[in-house]
Length: 287
Image (cartoon, rainbow, N blue to C red; front, side, top):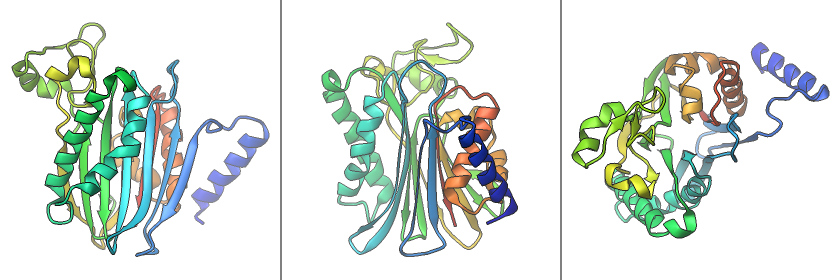
């Protein structure tokens, strides 16, 4: 355990004794690869300051499938809904792995599974309710190949030799104005100072959102990255982190913390210190 981790643990114990633990209503967990003892994951979620139930959900586990090991990681960030991100947590990876071409053409399989999942959500809108969710998913295949997909503004970042590289695309209305207008929608900064689809939604792509669906898409951006000896870590996080911290700042903040769950928790605490008001969900995979 590093000096930084020892101080972190001492601080937590003091906070708990005096009833000041900021993560007392948080969710936390960790796991590790059976294929490589050097690969571990940890996650930490903390509710934001908005007056509604927690709308972030996390999926993180290593799973044996067809003689291979898959690391399955995802952040689902709901808006006007905690039901739809919960639905995604239960169904999206199953839909991806049920695509017959997943092992040969994972990018195509993921695109098809994202579309199928969104169709299912829209068909069940009466039961699932209004609102929607963003998603960023990461599939680590046999500890060697990483497939990232995302819809919305949750983000995936990889660190190689300490240098941060963003693997996902932030789907913001201002940058996708033309395609939104081509579908008959509009982008407006009124009310407020954030660009929104039809003046309502601050992301250009999402699952659900039936009332806006003609002007939105659930088409993911997909990227593939090779895991090599230079790979340090991966961070998946909702925009509650990225609104207050750059990719490189996030990597730098945890590069000295060996335990993946402690690293994820440290990032949530740093985001809260920087006055992030959103729900904050973070997964860290350490190599």
